[in-house]
Length: 169
Image (cartoon, rainbow, N blue to C red):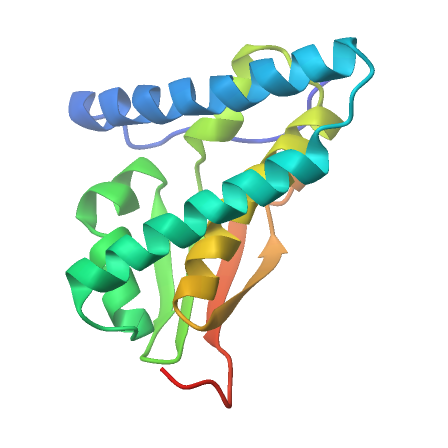
């Protein structure tokens, strides 16, 4: 039985549509993972590496378009108004060197819930998906700290991008 609390409060039609697109992306990961499990294959490391590379790719694109590696720039370019509504985000802290965000809803988790995944599987899929965020952080000479997640039955996801000291930016 699932115990993850992941219910949207914002239900504007355009936000729901964007969420459905993200849910579809989450289904790809789930169905690939599920087929691998059925065949006795653990694809976790492979999926984590591939999704991390995707995050690095996305991060480099954000850097090119944003023209800054400031974490304020990351907030502006990736976590804009629509993203904040879709994930029901609260920006807790935003500076050049630190960006802390709480996510109160996750369309990826919702997609996995709709497939009747158990909480353990949802947690594993979330951990794999977060490798993309780690890749984005890496592109910004930062590390990603994940303190809480909806997928692990917390009341929200608490993530923090922190600039790595000593790196040339």
